Image (tube, rainbow, N blue to C red):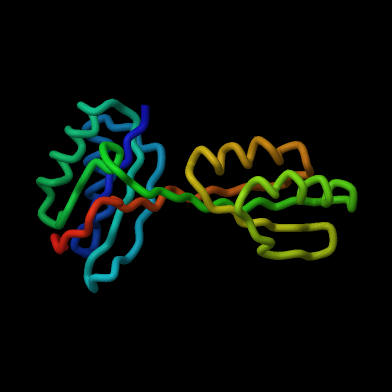
Amino acid sequence: MERTIGVVAENSPGVFSRISGLMERRGFQVKGVTAGITDHPGRSRFTLVIGGDDRKASQAVRQIRKMVETVEVSDLSSGLCVERCMMLLKFSLTSEKREELLNVMKQFPHSVAEEHGDTVILEMMGTRESTDACLEAVRHLGLVEAVKSGPLALDARAATAAF
């Protein structure tokens, strides 16, 4: 089981290092992480995907909440949440494989990011499950390389002015 934890923290040197160190010391298996700026200057948002059940997620939330820099932390798995990952897929294609690839990709939201001769790079965005499914569906079609981002996630419940 995986849990998604959302953290908004003051943007200070070493804050990510302290969060990841806390995860390591407490024995949480981090399966995905994304960090970025927010619409509030001086604050960053971290999305962590950890292995574990409700108890493990609650423990992680409590531990992160104790950090000085933490503004807000929540278990996004326990409610309505919108989560997306991005994936880049690089292919070396013959004309027949290109047509087959484009037919398979019709079932996934994607765009062509770059084309150079026989090389095509596609970008695809979706849930962790849909990006995994896409990767499996195209693996045999001349896939050279793939990279997948960690998740971005937001609570989809009514907005609050907490941060």
